[in-house]
Image 1 (cartoon, rainbow, N blue to C red):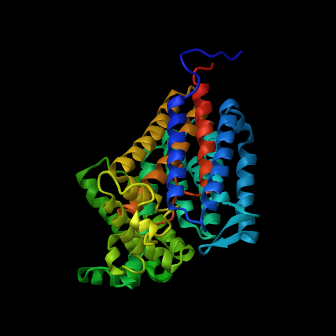
Image 2: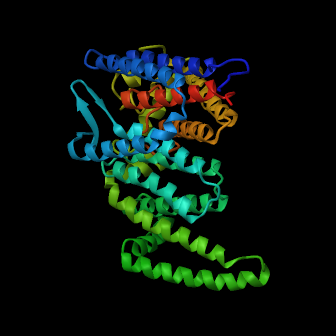
Image 3: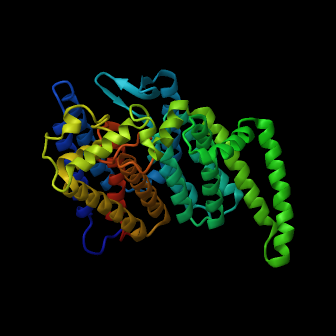
Length: 438
């Protein structure tokens, strides 16, 4: 028999912060709207009402039922990703949308939740971690990532990485595995973006020789294989030298380093295959937006101007010159935080950041308070999803991270994103509601 004990069954603080964030979104969308774009507010309001209904419904349904239907939810999500590649609507160069009348939705946003649910179910049942368990979790993650990259939608695929890393870490995987995977990812990104970097002559003159070497090694598969063979020989020789100094240094470390490098190198080929030239160029534009101020760097430059011009108190609602005069691109979606900074200043932007920080903090508390592993993993995955979207979106708006087209949770225009995040909040509320059940 299930019983409830302890004060409070509903996380009002989390719920209120989400509602206020959504209210700010509606206000800013109203401020940036015109006669031609007033439909944005209507669509966002419909998505908000659907998300609110879904969140309240999920909060009253036992979240453990998701464990039973996890394979069905994951399989259905994959089916939608395959279907959208066949019959989806092309927008901004990506075939990632289903269009139904005036409304459209993006299945990749809901796939994040499906991945969280299936990983929570699988990780919960693992008593011991090995290569097999890690490979299965990686496979669960890479399949939807690959389908989303085929659209291509690099920004939406990125969110799967922190979800995967956060959940396997909480599930008890060895830290060495996580370090190897993160290192492989860094190597892959470095190689693929450095190739783009040198092709554009974007780097300083001092990088020209390094760029020439890297381009010659990693632009040809045969030369890459020769490099990996030479790298392995050098690792083995280094092992024997290090053994004389530290006898506890295991040959397993050599394999970890070599495997990490191989994985990173071949992943870089995948990145170059999936991403188009203009997408890779956007990823490095934040390093020096003035290199191409009317092209790759235009969004970042205009966003910085908008945020800086808001100063402490802002220019006031509907008084932002960057947004109203059309200088700021994607002002209702990816760069909505720049509008908030311009019209509401440091105070308004700080308030929104405070609200989002509380939402993430409450999610962490819910994850730690859950008395079952499945609920704890679910909450952790949702927190990783919200936190990653928040950090990456604000980072790209202020120019310290690449522009990858990631929306700001609960604020950016986009029904699919809002609905998916609201459903995630509903699951969090449900876990909190049942935190004292036994």
